[in-house]
Length: 67
Image 1 (cartoon, rainbow, N blue to C red):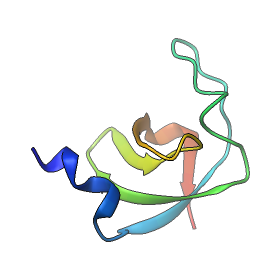
Image 2: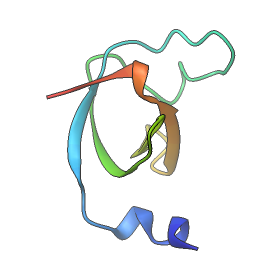
Image 3: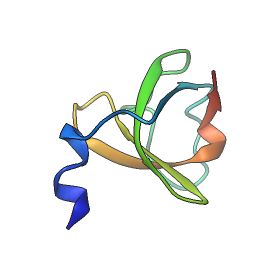
């Protein structure tokens, strides 16, 4: 149940959104290109960040670049 404490956990790093053009999912209303996001957790395929809604969301790494 680690996902319940991610919002309060320490930030691992910051990443910048480079695009929000998703092929399959709607992300244009929760990610803003050029905005920095705090990474709370990471897997091989996803970053888990606090998105524009103020909640944790898991997004493919190809939407971001590390700074």
